Image (cartoon, rainbow, N blue to C red):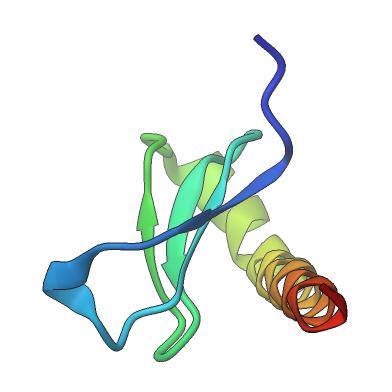
Length: 76
């Protein structure tokens, strides 16, 4: 099975959260309400430095995905 790069997530226990799952490396779930990220990867010191420079880009692309999906829902 080939997964898309981003998936929307929902859970009634977290009614106010907007979860987006990033399925490619580095894999993570972000709550767009507060930008809290849960990483599925273990990073060493070298990876951590590179990751810190990519976080802003990852959040921006995740937000763009969510905005695009919401626009598509409005069109239906």
